[in-house]
Length: 192
Length: 293
Image 1 (cartoon, rainbow over the protein chains, first blue to last red):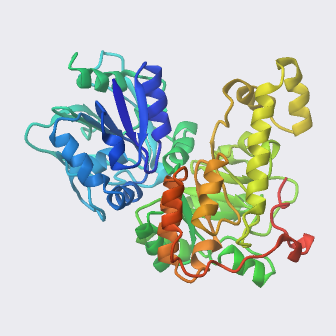
Image 2: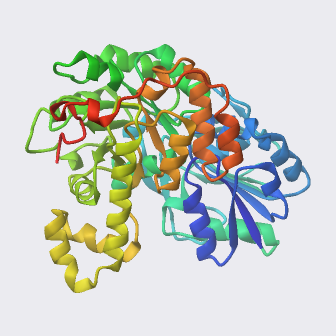
Image 3: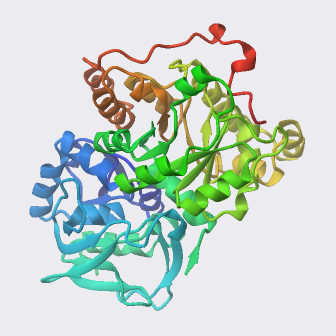
């Protein structure tokens, strides 16, 4: 299995390290031709405006849309989730528009409001997942077939899935917990 | 729910990696930087080249300037406090900036001690010239490091010197036998626990950007190939003849730092770079990098 990690900007090395720990081949993707032969794609955290712009300038936006239309599974964390969303309440860049959700950027405030909290996730075992939220977005609205996987104590939606697409408002790649990466790999291989 | 943890402080720096942080002095500059793809901006009253030219005491920027920039862009906003000036740092935290740069570009407030950074919820980035200096700052709570270079010169030579010193220091620690690590820590003036950690992992425990003299896309890619996680560009953008075009080119070169064809392509038609300074032209007492220890 070969998974690509979008490497325009952001925490892509952390995702590559997680995938390699799980015994999977992982490669950085900066140009459209690097999408060939991938079994799945991770869009990491970073600055969504910066990543969005580099994707557009190097023709990745449409190339990723085409691949996903052909069935390539995709997993976005934080900025990655923002880029996957069909709607963002303050977007000033072109998103991929893959998932029928509405997101709000920097929804919890500035860096001093960044936080850690434990999450109960419906599709993982009962052990709580360490949620690391950094200038994080939230999901305001889910539509159609999108399934909610986790919420904060106040009900805020922070993890969703739609078919072969997975999106999180937080950063599993910054933790020692491989369960979300394993969950995505199981989605890719159809083992779930 | 816990805020201000080491994980969220270092984590924000991890999100900035592979990106360019640009010095800006007003909301209009900040917008140009954001539109060009900057991953963060540094809010200042004057860019380092102007600070150098003006002389006198350089202090934290007027909060009005910082707030105007924070309102204009959605990317993280950093701001500088003087070395050891923990009250400027408290004020910046109260304003809600996303990162504080305890910076040698401003005139130091304390020649013996840096800010005790663990007490703040807002993370700090600090400059260094070598691995020992980096580890002292991390020991005090810096959640991100940048090599100092020599700000406001448009000359990358000091940035290269400092990045090589840090990377050589790491390579040396990895090779050092375990029983010699304590002596190494003493010689470097660095916290022993972090020395041991680097010996084991072969990398710094926090993100390390390059700064101080980056003026062209090739300069940025050079720093990335030498091992930087990202770059700060100070005077290099807004002291050039076409800031927007140069800013976009430096962003692209930082992402595609290992692709010479792209570096060549983005280096075309950028207009005049900022005028550079040879280190020999700067009297030793006017150098910024030796500030702090």
